[in-house]
Length: 560
Image (cartoon, rainbow, N blue to C red):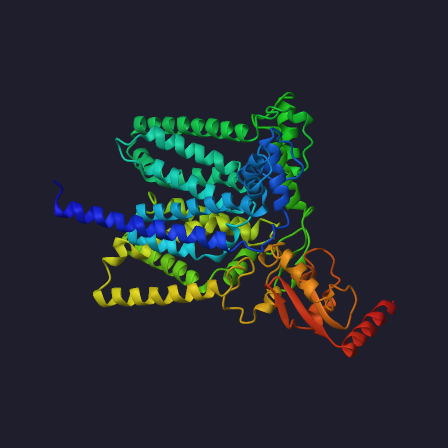
């Protein structure tokens, strides 16, 4: 018969499990309820096309960034092709149904955030991390999209979590199973989005930090036999990771043309061209053990990102750039697009963790938090200072789950054990107030979450002065815009020259992201009087103002 303590612990575990299940169900319900009247984003049809093409047995590329993970979104449509006409077939073939796999992936990501935080800091911390994740408007927005950004966040988080568990495994645990799982997760990240390729140096760095103290201690003691044994084990695991990763990549791309001769590969990017020339100079018949479409896409993405070809202008704080990014772009984007309560929690967690770690070594950084903080720092530096295709905060989503996990340290034992009763009550009251603020902020935009901006922007109609592109308009409201135009035929839509009347314009045209700056006469001279779901704006221009602007433009054209 179990003891009272066992029953209490069992009851507590059930309570936590029920709370987590309820929150995950709430997340799925919020996502499913928010897609009504939402059109597919601009590149979603191509993601579906490539996914469906894969399910028909063809991995050939027609553009750079579409990945095998899109087969998940295309699966309902593929199944519908085998059914007789009817309600079920229409449901499976619908655009809305194609979003459900992304929603399910987001639920898995939310559970993973809870699990990792709980494993590190306890169930209360896990629940805090889950609530932050649940009310993150950027993750919510992209959990309803047919694309690769949410999948990238999921697979990268999964890879880091399984790798952390593998490195932290105690003696007696099935280390081979943990290692194989981590290798498989690493492979999945490679077929979700090419951002996953950066996991290779990140995992190496995390492993180096984890075992550096032991290696240094062995070297100082001149105990070379354990050192050689450890290095040999590292080499064996590295081979396993490479082999499993290659198997996953080849399988995802249907084993289409691996070992294609590098000498015949039409690389677009300079780095790959130089690498090809160096390798083939030593080995003319060399080929890589990856499918042709995988290598082609990786090279294509790099070429496009370096040259700016294939995407619009980059816009930040009223300035346009073509073919180059803005240093600190994602810091600015996060400052406005991440809810202020979440920023406060993140900053508090970083400060508290840093202070306790520096003063008292209260945490075990090398064993635990390195797997969280190393990728955050790496991606922050890369995306803000080296990445040029800065088309929206969606590229930066990969760091958000990791920061949500780290936020759990605020409820960890090292923190709670240093707080007096009054401080704990104050912390609980502060947390409650932040939760209310966060909920009010997010739901004031819901279900229109892609253009979410926090309270640093008091007038939501002026968001275009800060950011543009997929931060505001990614094609998600086109159906509503069409209905608006039918109800308001008097509205003039995106006139290229100064025009009197009620003017409607999309934010990407207004800011020049789409490379046609016809609407700068509006941006420089007027403020919007209304908006269409935050992604399109309404201006009112009098005949006198339009005539004045036409005269000014005519005089500018006449100048030598």
